[in-house]
Amino acid sequence: MRWPVALLGMALALAAPACPGSDRPGAGQEEVLSRVQDWAGPQAALADSLWKHPELGYLEHDASALMQDRLREAGFRVESGVAGMPTAFVARAGRRGSGPVIALLAEMDALPGMAQAAEPVLSPVPGQDAGHACGHNLFAAGSIGAARAIAQWLEAGGHEGEVRVYGTPAEEGGSGKVFMVRAGLFDDVDVVLHWHPSGTNSATQATSLANISGKFRFRGTAAHAAIAPERGRSALDGVEAMNHMANMLREHVPDGTRIHYAITDGGRAPNVVPAAAEAYYYVRHRDARVVRDVFARLQAAAEGAAMGTGTQVGFEQLGGVHGLLPNDVLGRVLDRALRGVGGVGYSPAEAEFAKQLQQSFDRAPAVESAIQVEPYRSDEHGLASTDVGDVSQVVPTAGLSTATWVPGTPAHSWQAVAASGMSIGHKGALNAASALAIAAVELFTHPELVAQARAEFEERRGADDAYRPLLEREAPPLDYRRLD
Image (cartoon, rainbow, N blue to C red; front, top):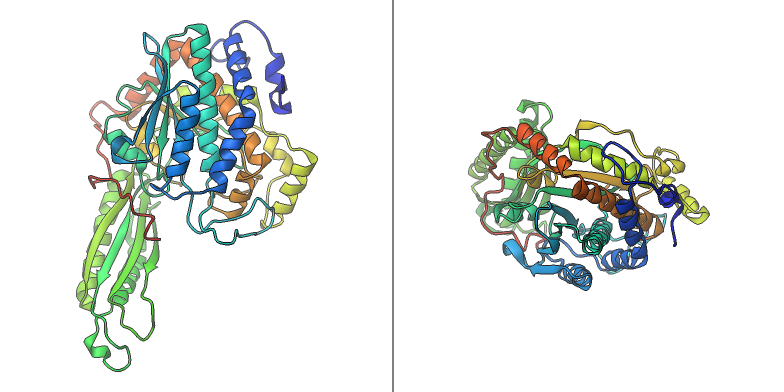
């Protein structure tokens, strides 16, 4: 058996079935861990295939097809093109019976402008734009590796219950999971587990920021900027006036509000008064009500900017997500699993890669910190936004992170792309698959934990707090990345 060093301690801890609250693996967990390890090579190959052919949100056609193929090979029943999204899918394995339904999430989209070779120095890939700067190639492969092992364990042991994989497109601003939630695809799920690439190993349960995003498109009148400027009405003036008002707005919003924008179309030639211009905005805050209020004020600023510049403005909402609702019961299950698996140990070549890459940072933790598992905490205040938040509003949900990246690496960076395409990323994804699999076995074999997670979920959500999506558009914005 080919156990990595990080898993040897768990592999040697053969004993009676583990009890909740123990980091010691039980026989079922050892079995599923072995099955994860057996697929380690194909899992790395799947991650590499997605990394070498990065696809943007809602355009992940090759990635989605390959992921579905790997699940069908393992006996999963796959439903494609769900919730109006061609690249979304739900894959199911197991027998429902009296057992729980445990779902794993699998993100797959890359980011624009992030092409990078698997090198420890800045090395853009000629002729390529997108790159897996958030490690979703690893996310997808690790979740599939875990799900395959869980399905095999269910089948071999005759256990009741179902494992699912949700192929979720367009996490990066497209809010793909929100459409799946709205379509009722999580209504019969008992628990959702997920993970994310990182520079650390942690099962800490954190909140995230609610978010509304969209594009403001100004329309004006083109004219020669030197001969007849008085006949033009600059759409870019409209964008810049809006941006100025948005920057003044920052002083008069609740603490913790984040407002970001990019000018995604500002005209093509200085001697032409731009007839069209566009700005892409995000507003974030912990409280969804604050996000709605601030975004309404932003829309009013856009209308004022159009009025003042003699232009017209339209708005298209592209995304809208709720904050994460933490679940401490599930978080502790994941923490036990992650501690049993351990962190990521580097070979001499990987350590050299990591140290060279860290030279691009102002400061960085020790390379050896990749082997550590962070202390468990609950209710941390996260600053990112994710459409997993909407999933967590309708079903008990928890996640973990593993050190797929060199310690100190920020997400959405070329350094994240580099490690996501080599063995450091593969090791972290294998640890994630292992932790998810043994956590699922604990939940399948201890149904009282599932009940406790549901009770905590109901208490946190509140009896009268019905889910209301922040995303108000009816159909997914399938072309939102085609415009980049």
